[in-house]
Image (cartoon, rainbow, N blue to C red; front, side, top):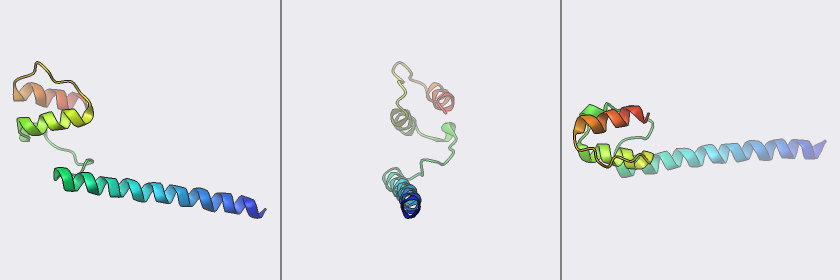
Length: 79
């Protein structure tokens, strides 16, 4: 009976540690890029450099696209 409670406590501690680490990772990204990764942004307000950085972070290929409107549409389509 005692080992069951130890397993439950260990599992809950694991989930708490994972949660805290993920929130710290969000802070690191926020300090590096200036915007939190969960923030919803309007792609038309971003510069071309920021759009390309966002597409790079999402792993989307944008070669051959030159106009800002095309990049903004690709950002919107990628989520």
